[in-house]
Figure (cartoon, rainbow, N blue to C red):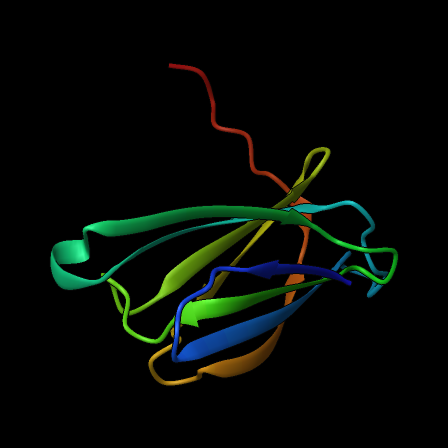
Length: 109
């Protein structure tokens, strides 16, 4: 399992499984998150990790207090995307799943 450490204490963590709509794990999906925390949200982290063969990735060291109450994890693989809203303040140690689906295309204007 890819394990990304943000080095913040007290540390929260999120185990995330990336799967297709039929429940199969997605290998090498990229998962990104932007974290703003601290006094005046002066500290910022942009984290990115890839899933292992089981479709799993773990982010640890996530601050329990973030600028907005939730973090948005965005997962992508080829034309598939999915998002997860995670509130480390209310759910410090979490296990979640992101189901990837084809991105809806916007009509050109």
